Image (cartoon, rainbow, N blue to C red; front, side):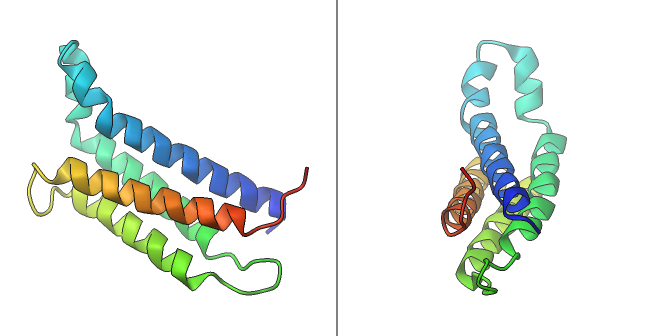
Length: 125
């Protein structure tokens, strides 16, 4: 995989994690003012869509070796925990009330893994 494709993958993953955070934190506030958005904020399909989008991007970007041929196993582990938390939250495990904090924690872990992965690679300017 080229450095450009790897950089794009990490940037896309960081952006998607940001959208996930906006969804989790901002939409419930806006939902109080706009009931139509409240339906989207509570829609189970939205959480599954974020998790199902994040998982392959994380697998694609975090498992690629660096230019020196080494894999960043701690980043892979951090990303895997983040993705697992996204799926647990989408499944509303352990409770529906825990869904938002678990999703936020998963998104933060996944964002951190992608940001560290992005920083460890050379970038074309």
